[in-house]
Image 1 (spheres, rainbow, N blue to C red):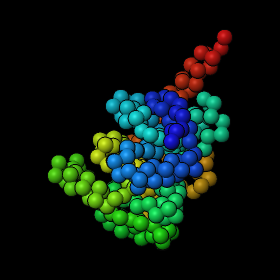
Image 2: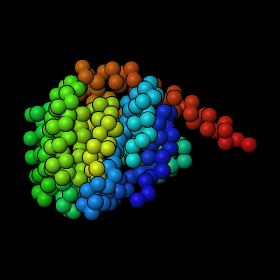
Image 3: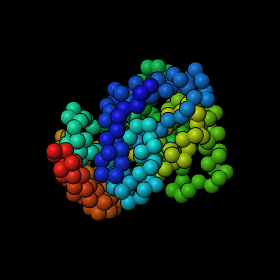
Image 4: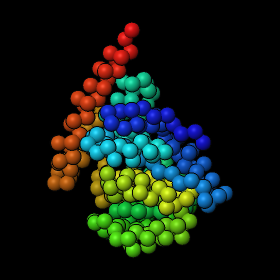
Length: 262
């Protein structure tokens, strides 16, 4: 099972991959889990510009992204950066769409999924939505963690609940960088299980938060839509953090051009 190649972008290695490739790998990992419950676990980071800048500020977070089996290009600026470094056909691998693609495949092949994250009132809506779209989907558990670090006892209870559910895929929706840290810290706690951090996908698919129109996503204006929808929560991310990406990407691109000259 060869993993997709990665390209360094500003501060972390991003996978040059696609929805089809990620879904295929997750299907293979689930099959390996069924054949051997002690098979290695895996985790997937759906990586936005916010994650890239966080990785630049926090080397420990860069390590988390770099250690991921797959770090998908979730934002269009990252897609454009990958294309500028030679991956001409690179497309976005967007967390909410990836979640639906994986649920569709899980329903078809009988894989079990677990939902970790979201608010208590969101999870029943999310489960109902997913079951309506994919009636054969096997959702074997869900847990909404509190907005604070779990105690040792709480963490152990959740770990046992996930193991006893025999989940093949665990969708983690507690936002960046918390979800990536949780997956990294628990990467050896769930043999054979694939952890996928999907961020706001829980709220989107539960119908609690609107998604940006497709045209805004294509031209890289999703940030503006989300900022307009949730200014109190997201203003710092989109006005202070993500604008730093463009000059850093440009600097890396200019450096690569200079180094490529004879």
